[in-house]
Structure formats: C-alpha cells, structure tokens
Image (cartoon, rainbow over all chains, first blue to last red; front, side, top):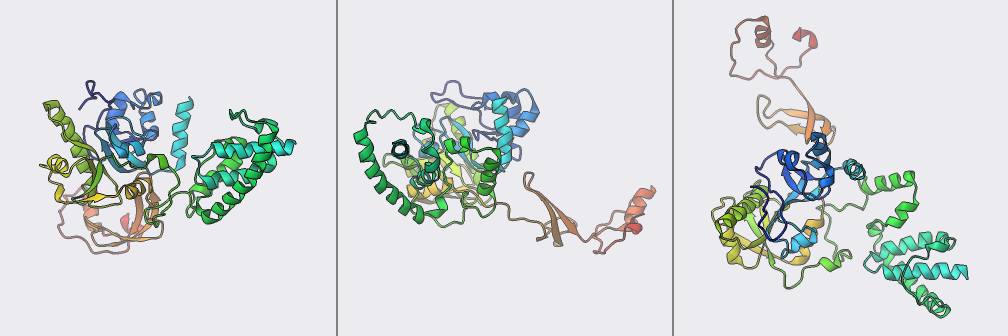
Length: 111
Length: 301
C-alpha cells in the first residue's frame, strides 16, 4: 500500500508486510519495514536521510519496540493525541533500547 | 535588595511554569536559589511588568507560603523527584554531571523508569491536559488470539486501507496492542457495533469478549515501560526444539539488541558420523539422536 495522497489527513506509508523486518524510527516511532525505510526514508524525520545510506536505517531505526498502534483517524483518537501522533499510519507505542541509540540518532539531527 | 530580587524572580518562575511537576520545580528552586541570587540575568524573561517594589514585598510573603506547600509535596512523592527533565539545569551542568545524571536515571532500580508491574499510582500529575474527555470515543478491550495481538492490529489497518479504496469506511478510530498484555487488543470506536463490524472476518479477534476500559487506566497502559530483559548471565534454560530438545542449558552471554543469548550445553555429537562425513565417506543418516556425552577436544581431531 503506498502513501495516501487523497486522504484528507496527512498520511505515511504503512508496512507492506508483517514479520521480523518491521522497524520503528527512533525519533518519531513510525513503523515500516527495513526496505521501505531504505526506499523512502521516514516521512516525519526527513533529515535522517535514510534513502541515501543503509547505515542510517540501521542506526536510526530499531526492531525492538513494545506495542503497536494503527491510527486510522488521528483527529478523533484519544490515543493518538496522548502519543502526539498526527498522521494516519502505524506507530510503535514505545521503544525498548538504551539511551545510547538515541545519541546516535541525535547526532544525525545535528549533522 | 539583590537578594530579594533573586528570590522573588525565582518565585515568579515557579508560578509561570504551572504545568510542570510541582515537586520537580520545588527541588530545582531549592538547589539553585543560592546560585540564582548571584545571577542578575537569571531573572528570566517573564513578561510580567508588575515588577515594582510593592509586588516584590507581596511576593516575598507569598513565596514563604508557597515554599512550605512545596516542601510538603516533596516529602510525599520522593520517587518523582527527578521525573521531568529541566532544560535550564541541564545546560548549566557540564558533561560529567550530565553523564552521571543519565546513568542514575537509567540504571536498574532507579525510580525514573516505571515498570509494568508497578502498582498504579492514583495521582499522575503529568499530562493533565491530555486526559480523555467525555466526548472522546470509548476504548474497548477485545479478546484476541495470544501471540497475534500485533498482527491483529496490523490486519485492521490493512482492512481499513483496502475498504477505503473500495469506498467503504471502517468506523474505528484506532487500534493498538500492548505487548505485555497478552491476549487482548484495544480498539477505539464510537459504538460496539462498529467494532464488531470492523473485526468481522478476522480470525484472530474474538468479538464475543469485549469490555470497555475506563480512560484513566488506558493512560497508565500506554505510559508504562516493560522491565528489562529477564534473561541474564548464569541463568538456566531449557531447549525447546531440535536435537537438543528438553536439554538444560546455561546462559553465558546475552545480546539484548538482537534478542539473542549464547548458551552452554552438553553436546550430543555423534563423532563417528562426523568422521565419516569429513573423511569423505558416505554419510549414513542417523534418525536417532546421540546421547549426551562430555567430549574432549582431542576426540574431535
């Protein structure tokens, strides 16, 4: 499923398959497959430049996340508001990782 | 007069930050008060223009009362002392202190990260503004096949997208699964019939077992983190499948990021079959598993 251009709410791609290749972006927690990140990067965090280098995908996304939420209507959803999600897509509830992965993530932001 | 100004201005700052955690700002104020009185520019850029002498006097007396209130609160909730990071303080710290603070926060046993098993604290001061309103749709807890919670949430999303391209609209608002709550997924929808219709045709979701969830519990669900990995060095484990099924193994190394562990186990190697294989002879396929035997490395030569 590609991204929804005609949808009134902003949207991001949803994962094309479901399995161990699902990864979540460290910063915005968007969930897609590794290949999708490699092709089109993260819609919320374009500065990570994941399309350019697969190293960026590995550094800025993680397969270790807890919980998943599909947001169909972000305007009416309490859960989306709580998690500060504004777009139609699949997100991780929270990421399980040490803070040092976050440091690598922050370095990319500054670079 | 400088001293008075310093205290008054930090008092103002506390009033201004009323959506911060009260205990946190109380502690910060106590620590920095001695420092702040030397910082003339620490009187922050609050746009209060009632900075006359009269208001200073008033604030001083108010300040004493507030300080006492804050002290009481601090004693009641010691665990939340470091709950919210304050950027000004972090900028004033140098790197070593910052590293120490981070380690303190995230080491095992620190109170900063809350775990799934912790008792539910009735007072959650943070995020008051995001509490569910009465106008929000209700959240339903739906029974689901164990191990398939994530996949069910994903299937609902796929179904939504597929139906939308056909012109129908699925009436649910969101669907989420929490990993440590096994066997249930949570769906947000206006009415129960919407929910049943949305889940029709999906084999993993059992719409006959549906209950509502009160809003304050949901915020607890979403905010809580899981405990760190239960598997540590030195623990024992049992192998589930393969040649070594049922054998006891000892864990010698754990890789949390890859969710892998290295274990030590008594080998079940058939030396003769190996010898034949590497000797170039035909391999006689053995269907029975060799018995466990401790092997010397010279036997493997």
